[in-house]
Amino acid sequence: MHDPAHPASGRCAVSGGPRHSEPVDVHLILRRGTASEPEVLLSRRAGQVYAAGLWHLPSGHLDGPHEDVVTALVREAREETGVVIDPVDVRAAVTVHHRSPGGASRTGHFFEVRRWQGEPRIEEPDVCDAMDWARLDALPDRMVAYCRAGLDAYTAGARLALHFQLPGDPIAFDPGVDRLRLVPDVTGRPASTRPDAAVVEFAERAVGRITTWTDTSWARENSRVWRACGLHGGTWYVKVHPSERFHGREVRGLRTWASELGAAAPRLVAADETLKAVVLTAVPGRPLHGTALTPRQERLVFRRIGALARRIHQSRPARPAPVGSGPAIAKADRHLAAARALLRPGDEEFVRDLVRQAGRLQPLEWVETHGDLQLRNILYDAGGAAGEEDDDDTLVAVVDLERSEPGPAVRDLVRLSDAWVGRPDLYEAFLTGYGRLLTAAEDARLVIDTALDAVSGIAYGAAHGDPELVERGRRTLSRLRAEPHAPSHRQETPGDR
Image (cartoon, rainbow, N blue to C red):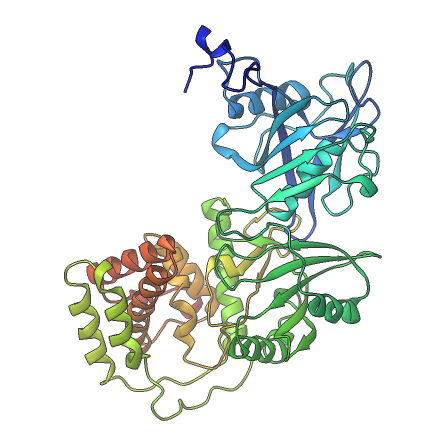
């Protein structure tokens, strides 16, 4: 390849014409609000500029070949809005290849930023006469079509989009001549996919006409979840389960213990056993996975998680475990065989020793459990005071109940325990909210179940190309081997005094 800065790069291409070149833009998606009602900052163009009178994201061009796109974004944000952004808080959102109605093309890099310093304000009044926040599902009509295409692609979860307008197309967004095309990602699945027609019909029978479908599935196979926005307002989530078993477990959980949690869990609006689909109310907040909190806020949140776990476990009277319902040791050989190539020396012997110990354990009482209690399935909404110790507005909620079923209470600590590794203060905060220490029998069962879950995760991750799941399982086994006994029976928490 030729270096663009080298004189030779100006030579004619093989086709005989000059090499194509075009401007590079950066666009700032400054985002605030909850996961169910996100807002972005828009500015209205004014003066002697292109698309005067239309709303647009704060944006600009690179100053030259010396400037990378992240540096350009940080600079443009400060020049246009006054906010200060740390480059480490910049997240790539989507790239849009655009052609205007006049025929000129350009490449735009859209970046999401959720943390910044300062309050946005108009810094360039000669080219901007208004600045305001707008909900992503209620963007203004008078908006630059190019910018609207980038936001629609971002909302759909696309990585790359094309927006080639034709001569005569309006500069302002017009849904009748929307030229947005989403390019599928490496999985081959388009980023913006509506559910099947039967699922759409089922959902609209439950909540009325739906105007916007946004794919919010996890980046894993068999995850099929959409955020649905209604014609007259309202937001719901529509989920299609990968199996009848997952569907049955989630519906049962929603109709039993989850219905008693109020705002701390979604409400079941409708279910269809044939489609294996559900319509759920939207729960405010954002997943705790990846959310940056102060240590004080973290302790508050983990106390709330402990209290929420207690409410789930006490939602129905405890009952004796069914005969033969101990740890899932029957699957251990199969999972070990599938994970063996990725295990570290000594891992298999450690797990097999735990399996032998499991046969000597007394069965634990069964309670209602979430079944997949981990940070990505726990939502956090700071409310008004952003997490003060005495903040009653802070909400912690659970979603994704497809693994919900009765079992020992420690079932819900298996994946959650990864969140307090190296943070005994968070574990103590959880137990404070939970209201009691674990028993010695629960400690032992937790170690065994966590090890078996780690091996299962490694096997699944290896079979389905999920290196994150593999690494988490390997990390968990290393932790358990270094400190095989949970500390709960050795510690006292304020809730037990």
